[in-house]
Length: 301
Image (cartoon, rainbow, N blue to C red; front, top):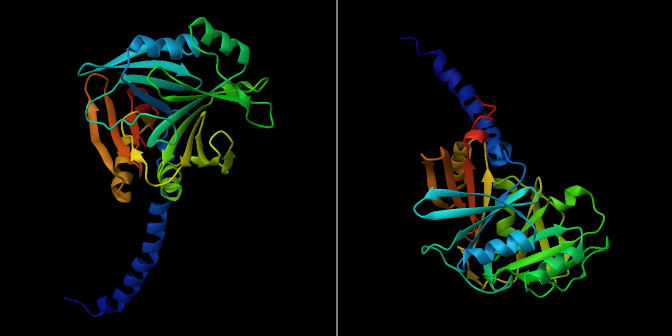
């Protein structure tokens, strides 16, 4: 057996492997879920414990969102869907294996605020009044003439109504999902470096007198606020849904980054829906779904 040249080659091979390792590590570190985000927005879940008719009236008739066909994935769980700008608001009943903390935006971590945008303040007030509800109290909220009001839905969860008169149509397509978190600096890498959302410049939020760190994907904005580390964790009232073209990519990256898995990769036979549920650093559900339509849009096949 000829073995003479092999020892001479080993240092060369070793140097190549060493030189490639940092590049491979850098490539892995730079990867995000962003390239497989198929729907140009996110959807948001809100779980409730009151009569569904009250919730449907509030989000449908009062806020003016179109109610879409209800999904029935099984196990007696119905998901009512409303078209809120470019996103879907999905309402479903509370389930027993989650933690729910009542109160406002400052009272717990989790999905604590949904913000919607409107063009006509008076028309919105009139819809509240027609349904026997007190008209929202709007206050100035920005240099562009926007005005903001905080209200609660029938389940007691916070909703922010923002009126921006004469804005481009794209403004009214937006929704904002407000997360209360314990540590902004731990949450930022999850939404920026793992999910791959566009990080916006932080701004002072006059409504809650705190800094707001926001991340955008299409027509949806996820905003982080923090009011200290001692808050209870609400893991049940809401969650964020992303429609992706390849959920296996999400699963693989979650494993590589040691992201907490709430519900592992699975397939629903009824809808050919493939999903994985992940938790952000505060246990807020980030739910990634691959549908038959999004699957067909893959560019790797």
